[in-house]
Length: 298
Image (cartoon, rainbow, N blue to C red; front, side, top):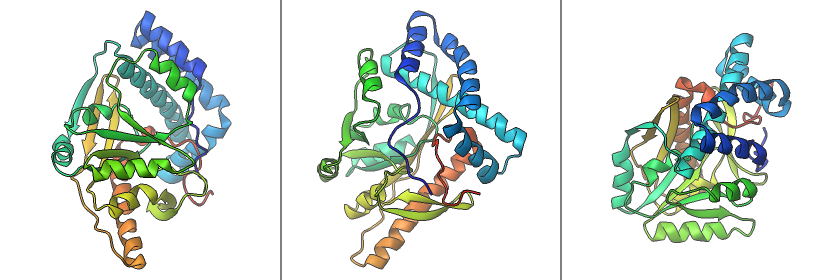
């Protein structure tokens, strides 16, 4: 088992290069450069390559050659997702199209007592902001405060789209109070449910046939405040089209019994991982957790 180290792949120089291409040429030029960048990462980025090869070969069950091909496809798609994020955040002209599956569920949540939206590092979380921006209720995005501040500052200089409310995760746990305030005010909190930092409480769940650790925190919050939960995803189907999905909101009622609470948490996380499995069975290349995610490494 391995936890996330609190830092996402990519660097400031790469963002600057792609931003230059997007502003001075077009998105196709940025995509073209990715074919070389993806090859570089497959060959030289050993730390990220090994766990991703393990994922395709040992978890998904692909053969050696197919695993190598999907390793390349994964790096290529990840680069495109980053470019698409910059395009949308900077308000650069584009021809993206979107299919919204279950958008009514988010409006239902917004029109009632708010709740939690739980996503994962699959597809393009930022693109899912298109769904969130359409909800007639404040949406608070929970994210790590220290993650790539330089890159965020770079993008802040070109961002033209409406910014979401951000709840930064901090060591002093002040984010928990902000989340509580938002939920008590019947607003919406969006958070990831597939990563955790060392020391976080986790639960082992069978995911794609092998046990993996998932953080209990995001799910416990929903249960503690008796708020509905919806699981969301935004996958890139081709260069111009995204499929966004939100499940029907469900309330997992809290219990005074510790045994029952753990059973409820296990049910919540199992429901969440089953939705993840549906997505990854169709889009295995859009899994973007570049570390050993499963408990046992063979």
